[in-house]
Image 1 (cartoon, one colour):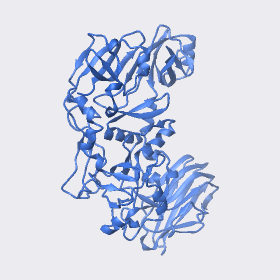
Image 2 (image 1 turned 180 degrees about the vertical axis):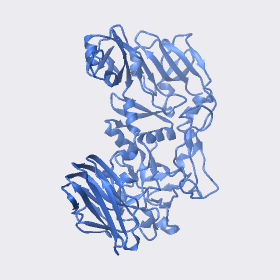
Image 3 (image 1 turned 180 degrees about the horizontal axis):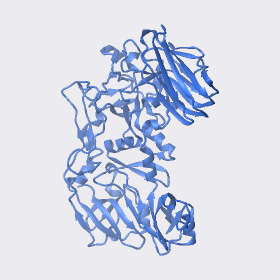
Image 4 (image 1 turned 90 degrees about the horizontal axis):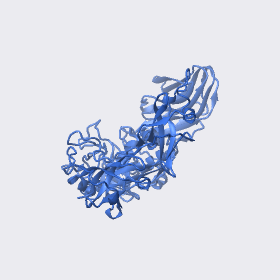
Length: 581
């Protein structure tokens, strides 16, 4: 076995790294375990000192113990690759450990949705462009089912069924797999999309329409003050917005956002001045510009009244300001607008500003919880796929019967409540109109300190609403029928198929009979076994998280929960879970 650290083959001496591989934990079935080694010793040789930058060197400041080292463990075939760290060093050896680099991927996904730029997915609200988005596209964040999610929705049934543009194109949904696909692609991974496809509505408290946008790629040299010009050249302008070289005139309540790269060589402020037609109402803002980096400023809402506000921009200070792909745009909050008199056709919708306060790891967990899947990260081939109990076939089990060490078994059937049948819960308030109500999913997949509900996805749903291009439905995005503000659940969850958004497959009966059936069968009369096997390198290399094994001694099939401290030629501890009843 070889351990290659930063491209150099380390000298192992008499040491041998012991590898631990995990699939799932019955107390946390949607978790992705990380492969890792034990802490193993490397001899203090010239080559190993070179790899670790001579951590014993007197007076050196190489910070050897603060570094992460790129590591590949192989023996003809690659076992796994990851990041290693130096744990300790004595006069004759180094203590070293390696962790699967899939951990890096999962850490990178624990970022807000808006941490990735989505400006290329901005959409102009026109019939043609929305119709083009009314289908699943793995490269898109949008799914535009023709439904009205507007708080001030039109209440006339004929408008909702005939496709009146005022409610038909109110706001979009987001495509879970499209969002996750881009996040994974940025890390160099290929995303193997699972079923089911999911979409969710945008957060109703933070939906904006853009009435004007300009990209700045300019250099300014103010001396005292300098008015910014060229606002008559722009990326986008709503038809009713008036512009001159130095000003933008906006109607309705609005806020101003400045976002992008700015470099200055002195203390310089961006001054924003808004004044109404009478000259009596003014709003002044001063925004410090960074010396080097990214600016992301959003003003408080400016209410203009009936006459509109004229906005101008001035640089204050002496020095140089360089804008590099910096956006200035005006956001309009639709929350208080009356859709019946103010249709939003012709406005721009910015993906960056509408993304709700979720992380990409939340989306990964959402897929896992709803469909009882677990993520499989292949760091060698740079792919992320999903395994599921519902997809496992006993006929495809690998026979480990002759590798089992009889007498090593320790059968465990006490898993703190999981030995009884647990169910993913689905509820809906059936005392209200069928398209409304509150529903949520709970499942034992986070921690099991006590019996109860352990994870609540903050996504509302209904039981039989169907939305497609031929039916325009009014769907409330509130989490309850009394429309109490600031409720916990403010995002609605859908199954998505083609140009169809639907709630109906989210019923408990459907999920229990499909994605969770074998899971519950495994937990109904739980039998977990700690035992030992004589495994060889090929057994470990070919094993995957969703691989079943058969042991004739027990006359049954098992899921492998954990392979502990594997070393060639040494007995290996394995934890098994009886699969099915």
